[in-house]
Length: 331
Image (cartoon, rainbow, N blue to C red):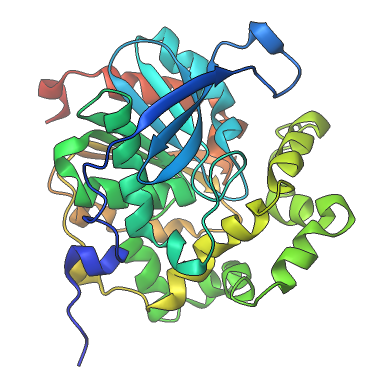
């Protein structure tokens, strides 16, 4: 008989335990990416939330927008969106998620269960002085954004997800033996091994990681300068293991059943590049049934998995229009 988890079980321990935990905002730091120094249109700072210290990039003033990156990335994957959203009248925060770049990297696989990540986001929002936020996520950040909207509807103003399927669709594809998606997801199973994935990905200045992750993108999307920034972030002590532990934690307690996910009530926009090398477009079919609030799905033909970096102008326009649209028009 299938066990009944409920929403807390679906995302693991930690979804309620850390709620309301106080945090603090640390001193700002100088910009370190690309050598732009004072000309950067954002500020670096450290924020304490949910018992960890997070490096964040912030910009602008207004309603809060939280940008959650994926693997193998860090806040820098949103470099094209931060300025655009700040200019549109939003307060923007792009954190390095737990385990990545300059944020804390807790030891052990269990520390990377989604329940803890959800409370990281909740803690960041509260510590920055807000009660609600629009949450935007790509890849693993998209998975975290879905989970946050399910578990904290009272804090979710709007939800935007880029090239990440609803968790019910993805777990269903793996459970039901979607052979094409299983083939695309081979690395998730490889990452369950201890140490070997870290050794392979980091060898020869992360040569395999660069080819595996970014070779499917449109030419020119990831310049040598950008790839160097990603390599430097992943090469920091504990960062590669922390990032891979997200995948290890995903399988440790089994995949939740479809009925265990509560419907999302926040107005939602899903943006999907159709040339995704890692996720099949069929995972977006039937997504609407997982939402009780307004829902939109926009395909960007010919764009790869790295959608906000490959097509920044189109993504920025979709983001700003959706986030600024009046609630009445969203119905």
